[in-house]
Image (tube, rainbow, N blue to C red):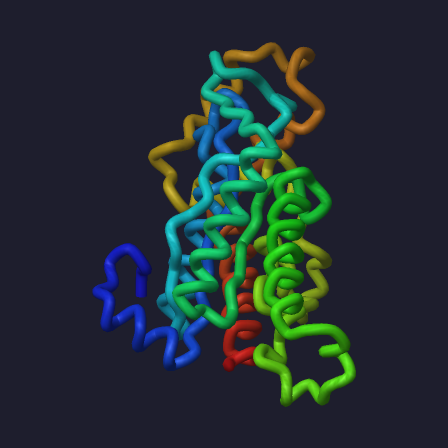
Length: 247
């Protein structure tokens, strides 16, 4: 179910049924001459859409803009660096309103600079602030009560921020952890699988190999089939997590 396509009674039913809400978070930034500037948010949004096909949940519109610090490029290459202070304020208000609707579990699929990057830290800060706001309404000493007596027993996990591979389990074929890098092989092959029409591998030739950033040369090794494999493993992990934490 997609939040923006739901009627009011459907929203109320989803909330009363305890369905989780999942949303993507990414940025618009330079991903080399061969990949779309929306690579990050496209990957995160694709994961959310695939999760929705496999388990009951509500998908909210993605957070498509965030702080990039202009690390890879600038406006002339399509990169949009969002002021982190404004980003935090926007996310805080957005999450507050989603909580007001009544969603008891909110999952943010964050794909940009890992979970220690500026955007992820801003998301987690907003989640922590909303936890504090809610807890302060319970009065002093609420931690002395039994967990089941609290108005929201899952206060510390109501809003969770994870990367696309946060819930990826060890694989039986011992392929190791999922490698993720900016605009290189992994992100390129993920996009090749998600939306191949947006990728132009021959565009890599527009930059002399000696002048390629250190994170770009292995993009030539991208394999759409391998990208599909990793994405499916990530999706499985998120589906499993949503099912295990049903309200």
